[in-house]
Length: 197
Image (tube, rainbow, N blue to C red):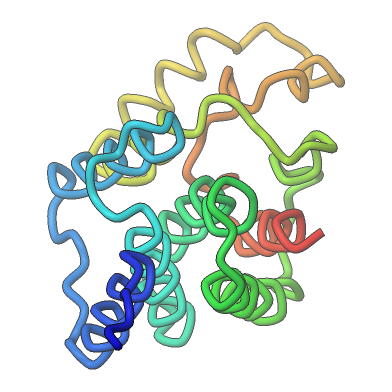
C-alpha cells in the first residue's frame, strides 16, 4: 500500500535539510532590492517560489542577525513582519507559525529595553488589523544607506517650516522616513510585539 506524500510535507522536509546549510544574506543594495521585491510579491499573492520557505528563511536570517547584533536586523524584522502572516493566516502551518513567533519573541525580548531618545516610533501607530501600507519604500530606504545624506537633506527642505505636532503621525512614510527612526531597536521590538499580539 503506497502512501501519498503531500507537497507541503516535501517542502518541509527540504527546508529541514537546508537548515544546516550556512545562510547567505544579500550582500549589496541591488540584492536587497531583489529580496524586497520577492517579499512584496509574496504579500500581493503572486510570488512564484515557496512562500513558506521564504518566510522561514527570513526568520532564520533574523534570528542570526539579532544574535550577532547585525546591521541588517531592521530589514529582517520588518521583512518578517510583512510576510510572516503567510504562515499564520494566508496558509496556516502550525510548526512554521511557531518558529516565526519564537523569532519575533526573541526580537521583542532582546531589543525591547534598548534606550532611545525618540518621542514615538512607527510601531506606535500599527492599526488593529496589523496592516501598514508603504513598507516597500521603508525596506528600500533601509537597504540603501548610501542615499541617507541626500534623503535627509530633501526631508529637511520639504518640512523645515512645519511644526512637529500630531499631524506627522498620520503617515510615517512622509517626512519621518529616516533610518534612525525605523531601525531603532525599540521600534523593531514594537513591531515584533504587534506581530505577536
